[in-house]
Length: 226
Image 1 (cartoon, rainbow, N blue to C red):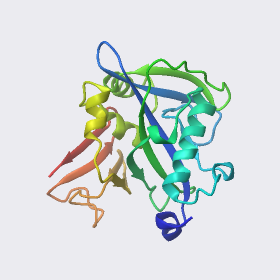
Image 2 (tube, rainbow, N blue to C red; image 1 turned 180 degrees about the vertical axis):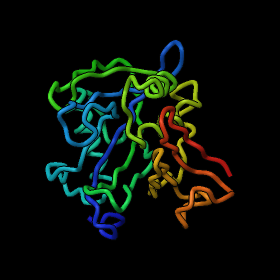
Image 3 (cartoon, one colour; image 1 turned 30 degrees about the horizontal axis):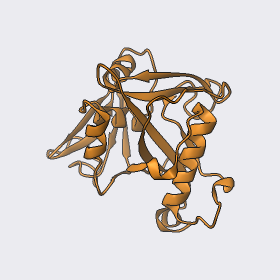
Image 4 (tube, rainbow, N blue to C red; image 1 turned 30 degrees about the vertical axis):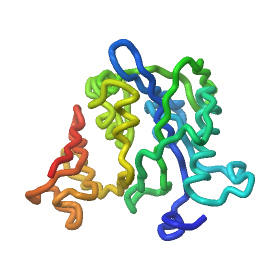
C-alpha cells in the first residue's frame, strides 16, 4: 500500500454514505453501533470499517480500489446492502489528529439506494434508521443520538440538497481532505480543518476564513466560509 498511508503510517478504512429519495427529501442510512464497542460505542454511523486482508483480491493494490472493496463488504456485513464498486463516488478523505491512538485513513464514498432491504448483523450493529440530514442533526443537538465529528460534518453538507440527483451532481471532482487539529478548551473542543485561518497556528481565535467544527455543548456548529 503506497500513497498517503505509506507517508503517514496510517491503516486504511472506508465508509459509504448511503442516500435515497423520499417524499420530504433525501434520507441517509445511519447505523447504531453496539454500545459495548470501544470505538464510538452506541454512536450512529454510516456503514464502514477498516480494510481487511480479504479485500486484497484479484490483484487489487491501489488504496482507493482496496477501500472501495472494503466499503462494499462492510455495507453488506453491517446492513445487508449489496453494492458494486462502480456505484461508489469518492466523497472525502479523513485523517485523524496525530494524538489519536488508532489512526485510520478513511475514504468516504457516496452511493444511492432504492428498494434494498436493510438487515443489520445484530452484533456490531444494533439498530438502523433512515433519517433526513436535518432530523439527524436535530436529534444530535437534542442529545437523542451520538454522532462522530466526521458524520456530523457530512450530514451538514448533505442537508443543503433536496434530492439524490442534486447530491451526486454536487460531489466535488477533487475531494475534500480533512486532517483536523483539535483544540481542547475548558468548555469543549474545536476541530480546525484546512482552510481555517487558525489552522496552521492552531489558534481558533485568529481572524479570517473559517473551516471548523465547534463542539462546545450542543448543538455542534460547523462553519465553512472564506
